Length: 245
Image 1 (cartoon, one colour):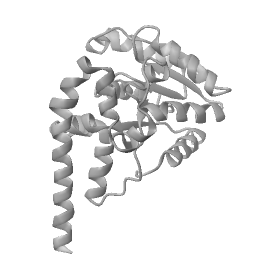
Image 2: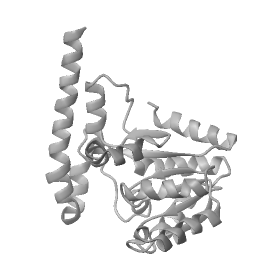
Image 3: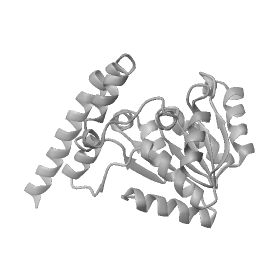
């Protein structure tokens, strides 16, 4: 569904009232690249109720191709706006992901900014937990026991989406957000780029400057060439449709 952030929040709130859950994928260039190369990952994305464009190249490519993507909606932004809406709806939130102490710090920040928000629990799962049935079961059982209405899952793609699928099977009435680095951002471990930098699509450069060792290979070797190819492909689609018109 092509929606803005306010419409997305209204939809989630309405579904809570109906007793229906769902999942949100924040598709940045890295996720789109992975999904275009692996049909199983593409299916994983399309099984979510809402997919938003988290990355200006994705927005630009969609518009070039003639698709109606109204705006960029980031996981970092949705962490705060969904928590605020959850507070207003008397709902609870669970934070899953981040190094030890990070989800707890993020929970305190969100509770301070969102009066009335109920924090159902937090979890910083051990590295590689998803590789064993016992590890996955322990994490899933912890979330299910807390029975939250909103689960923020910051484990990176596709791990977070796979964990969300396991959780949905046990807790179908909750809403889930795969938010990547949204939890450590909320905890204040690092900040987002200034507004003007975000609007021109250069937030990746800001992140790269903050974490060059972790992000250089992903951003420069993998994502940047793919983004150029994505935009070129979208332009070809646009030109072809014009010639046929």
